[in-house]
Length: 104
Image (cartoon, rainbow, N blue to C red; front, side, top):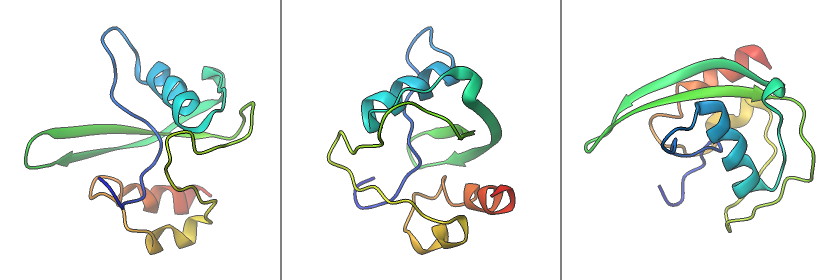
């Protein structure tokens, strides 16, 4: 969804668990290495788009190795939770902001 801000992640590949997907995607998209023990499940989004239904888990990650770098030409921003609503997001991501704001 070009031009929108999204939480990092991606599609689960065959035989992959959601945690493995997130670890792989964080390395591919942001150049960081995350251990599964450093992921804490927070909540999930369930959203119906015109062509598919999305079930997206949201994890909190507080520890990683490496420096966060945009590896796929995307924009990056460190944002305080109370400012996340200022960023245009895909419809499925919007409800997750309230959970992050409460937690952080």
